[in-house]
Length: 302
Image (cartoon, rainbow, N blue to C red):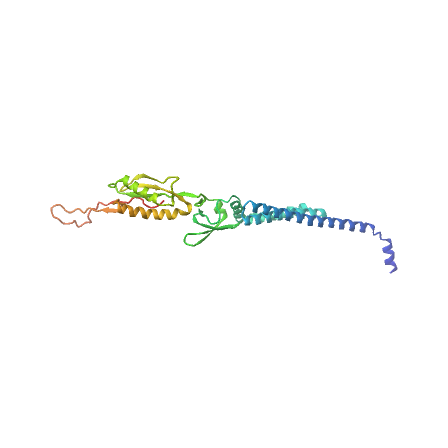
């Protein structure tokens, strides 16, 4: 015991105490940096989300950007705290960078969809409830996530499209404008009065309150087809009334044309059978047939 006391008496504890105090001070400062930095990072991220909410941005986009900003700021704070403790952060950052690169290469496709989802939420080429055509599919937009766009088709099927395909393809938005033009083509016979037919169509459009008078609806001769004179009918209507105007207008034109004795040509074929001269008999071989198809004018909606 005496030997131990002599050793402790000879031991100068001042360097150890100074080192412990210095390390404790660094630890305290590092914890202080971590706590204050975490609080500041959270306040900045929350403020960003509130700003995006006031601008009308998608809530999902606001949450995503808030989390991204918070994680990046927190990474900076943790790096500063570790550096204050004396941890060599250069090698740590190199390891994290290499790991991030490897993860990015492995998730390249998913990250491209994620980036496309962010762009769709920022630029908003379409909104929830609008009818769009994109990537070979068409339907009403039900939901846009960071990775996929969900469409509901007219026959109640759900189509899920990766955002990378949506952002990289042409998008046709049927509801982007308040009004739309209805394009119809109706064929009449060559023996019919074109002026009368055009006047009948104008009367039908004037009687429909859903058809706008500005821009004015038009009826013009668009084509002299093989068996019909094609009329291009182009009324304007509110976007929500387009389908109803198209179907009711076609029916009204058919009924009024029948009342006015204006014909709508339909496909027909003429067949001629040749007989042997002087015998009245039909040849044994299949008769020569002259078939002439007379297709109707395109009276369907484009």
